[in-house]
Amino acid sequence: MANRYSFWSLLKHGLKHHETWQPAWRTPQLKPRYDVIIIGGGGHGLATAYYLAKNHGVKNVAVLEKGYLGGGNTARNTTIVRSNYLWDESAHLYEHALKLWEGLSQELNFNVMFSQRGVMNLGHTLQDMRDIERRVNANVLNGIDGVILSPKEIQDIVPLMDVSASTRFPVMGASYQPRGGVARHDAVAWGFARGASELGVDLIEQCEVTGMIIEDGRIKGVHTTQGDVFADRVGCVAAGSTSTLAKMAGVRLPLESHPLQAFVSESMKPCLDTVVMSNAVHGYVSQSDKGELVIGAGIDSYLGYGQRGSPHVIEHTAAAIIELFPSFSRVRLNRQWGGIVDVAPDACPIIGKSPVKGLYFNCGWGTGGFKATPGSGHVFAHTIANDAPHPLNAAFALDRFSTGHLIDEHGAAGVAH
Amino acid sequence: MFQLHCPHCGATREEEEFSYAGEAYIARPANPEEASDAEWGDYLFMRKNTRGWFWEQWQHTAGCRKVFVVKRHTASYQIAGSWTLAEGKAHYLKESEA
Ligand SMILES: Cc1cc2nc3c(=O)[nH]c(=O)nc-3n(C[C@H](O)[C@H](O)[C@H](O)COP(=O)(O)OP(=O)(O)OC[C@H]3O[C@@H](n4cnc5c(N)ncnc54)[C@H](O)[C@@H]3O)c2cc1C
Ligand SMILES: [Zn+2]
Image (cartoon, rainbow over all chains, first blue to last red; front, side):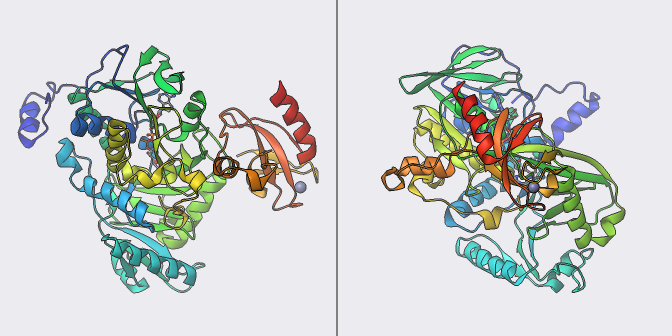
């Protein structure tokens, strides 16, 4: 590897005033043909390419990205990682990802700053608490760590939170997954990009796919802004833009794209060392290593491709956060942004084959796909390499929308990304 | 943030006063008993999710509570107009023929 990162390489390059580092990945020319084309250079697309090359020996792969690598939702999300989903199918999928997260920095030789600081989901009503109990019990049965906290226990972990009975929506308890946490979003994209590039994958930026070449119901290649490229297998991993690509292939998907917003505050001294989420009051917050509060809002209700959202959504979330953390009312906000998330009817992803042979989709991650990045790439690479799903994503095929086998995760997904 | 016009009560108000009600004019299978699983799944779940001009339903929830259609551009959020369901359908059908 051109740059094997270690204490010694840091010291060596440091002594040379850091002028000797090599670029982390190659910038190759687009070739006319590949074995596999991945559309979308976000975390999921890059992870897919990495595992194709690493685990399946498929190295003649291109990742086509219309902007720059990791500039989509990968760069815009609030980086919460957890696996405490209700149903077996999703719990296993997200737990698979969480296990990969636990070794990812070593695997990639890239510090993805995965910090298992715990994730807390608050309950504010009796029904919330019943749902939490049900979900934590389901998690424990699936071998996923989870406990139920009382307001007193919450207070011990998060002293700044107002858990008194005098708030508008009193905190009655929480579920807590100690192995959950946050990771550095950019580093995840960069780590997978570097690893994939090292294994021979061509990462092509500023290359938008504008059409699909399909003959006799089989994918043959794609039209791009840099010319036509051919491949017998194409994987679409384009988050909010997936429907646009599916339309090029004549495929209908059950997705709706919505803006989802987040914002960060000015940097402050450490004051919150876990992740706090609340579905009922619609907000969640953690503190980044830079000291900013990272706050996530809900989706805008309407279909939208503008990477911005309505201010009232932010206002709503800010109000909820201040209700929970009265002392945050004087914190100033620094930046606000939006990303386009692809929401599926059952709040679960679609990972698998499409009616067009050789064309695969990995989409529908909606508001909560960052946490799945390594797992998603891992099972999708398996699906493309074998033209058959991995056991962990078999239940997430597109045909569940005609068989009726939906996996309703609205309760565990909700606003809780 | 945008403002919507309600063709029923004539009010032009901020988006917050309305609720989104999804893609407009999804045709229900004429013979539900005979629809295949695929056709039924298509009706229930598959969506155009258009990037561009899009016909969608809104409900004036904090006003007259009636449902109407809006033609809106989903990337620029420009709004071409709002109509009652019946009036809008005539425009919609003319457009889809063209
Ligand atoms: C504000 C916000 C907060 C979030 N918070 C969380 C969270 O806390 N935890 C969590 O787990 N998830 C969260 N998510 C969801 C998460 O970000 C997404 O589910 C996930 O990033 C999707 O991953 P991706 O790599 O597939 O998407 P992206 O990073 O969006 O990658 C898709 C790529 O495809 C490219 N593309 C699209 N069309 C084309 C084309 N025609 N040709 C070539 N390239 C194309 C895009 O440019 C983009 O780079 C959040 C999302 C947002 C917006
Ligand atoms: Zn009205």
